Length: 257
Image (cartoon, rainbow, N blue to C red; front, side, top):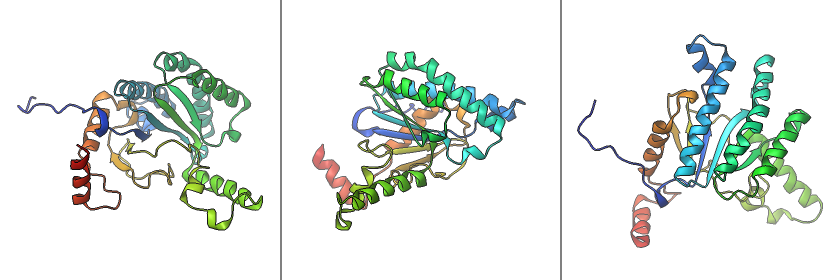
């Protein structure tokens, strides 16, 4: 039904997030609602990934980070884990051509050591085949956990102290940040979680310190262009203060315009 109001469109330029992070939750529940086995939701989730990547490419959003498989997801039934790993391999093979066509650079973040040699090789090949692309940076977090990320960064810093490269006085936020899983990439501006849950589930704990959070009840396979645009519109109405007052932000915006 048309309410008579003009539909607000998604703005472009500075008001859009430069980096979006998404927890793609609800694949299994989506399948169960349709009387299907849980795994059937994961291929449907891949279709949602394609839609979201297309929107980000179209709107020239520089970075998109997707939480595909957490370090805690190994606790799921072994059959489901095996099927997810197989889908991961097949998707990497299938999607590279599409990514290259849209100038998307793929990066997999997380602890790869738990993956099969076959999957590790497929990851390396997909990254290599897209590494010169100049468009969207698509980061897929697989076997990733925020605590793992901070822990491995702390170990790297400790090794530098032990070798004499760093002193204790030189350890600051920057020293830790440069050893996190995607050092040099701006932190997320917008965090989206589908599936109705309202938590960040050990995802980008360090990087999301000042990220705007957006939660939706939509299950991930149902997350479409309209849903993505709704999240982006919501973001554009947020005032990001970073510890400052609203008046300071308004004054700074006025000076910049």
